[in-house]
Length: 115
Length: 115
Length: 115
Length: 115
Image (cartoon, rainbow over all chains, first blue to last red; front, side):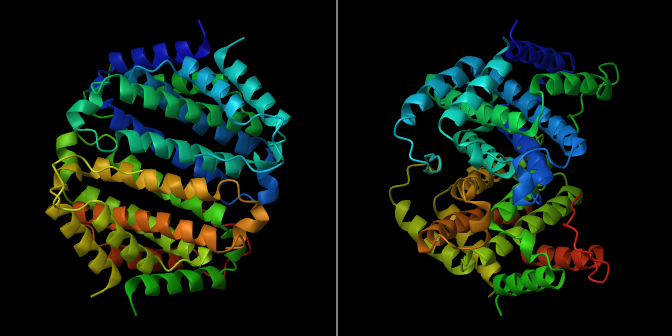
């Protein structure tokens, strides 16, 4: 089983056995995701720009980031599950679309653009 | 290869071939993650509470959510890669910790609590 | 002096006397804003939909929300100051634009739409 | 009348005349706030760190930031109104508390810390 499918199944079981499904609507889970992304922002907000390129601060920042990025992922797979979205397939499809949208040959060193 | 490792490798290659690595520091990628989470919030913000429980609005909302959740995942794996975090391992470790933190037996129907 | 101008001046003085101006670039301040919005999300995420309409939980939630909404406002006025934006004027201008964009007469009870 | 009280009153009238109050619960408004903060993040995410210190890119970025920061403020005052929070008083109180929490004399050039 793939790791996204595995995490999705485990989060679903975790939720069901605690009878927390009634809390897990799309709006509540999005807010929970926002809360966790806020914790990631807390960890990196005052990093010096030059030090933000990697894990220069050593193991502590990496460990804290690992915990918060994990929380983001757990709510993300749960949200996708409730929404009926196949997250792995959606991500592969989006990556494919991005490859066409930002062709390598025409890249002229400009910053990526989103819309 | 696992989903997450596969997506991480693809995002890294996507970035390198476009020479976008210089944009992908921890702060910029967290901001990009925030932008994508904002798009998820846009999609669900005015859903009626009763309709927020699932994909009641049918295929269109699910499709749009799939695209935005995919964007969140792609920046998440990229951010984890730059931070030197093994996202799958971190998520499994966090789920394990949560199982102990919220034991089933003592669950009395209260809402989940985070700190 | 208006309260937004007053808060802006106080935040600027607060920053300068601590020599924190070097931390207050647009990206860092946006991340700080995100962190505070994440704390607001934490407070409301598991509220029952029917109880989310007001301050039903009584004084405690209102007090905690007051603290976090204050933090959001403080970073918002600081960010606007660094960006050279007149926040009060921008908000009045946006409200005016929204009045034209969503005319009362044509409102047919549909949810507000953003783009 | 103060800026914040004026904007709060205008947003309340704007909402009532369109009968949008039924959409404006704490969770929906927080999600709307998140959506607007996401647009701010979009504008600054790829700025070079050295250029993120101000409005170096000239008028266009400032104008776009003004629009998005205005949207953040409008949802923020609306959210505070629904929550029963006096935003100006809460911000002044928080600033006062921060002055004690981060005394000038003991500042040794370290980055601000939040918890």
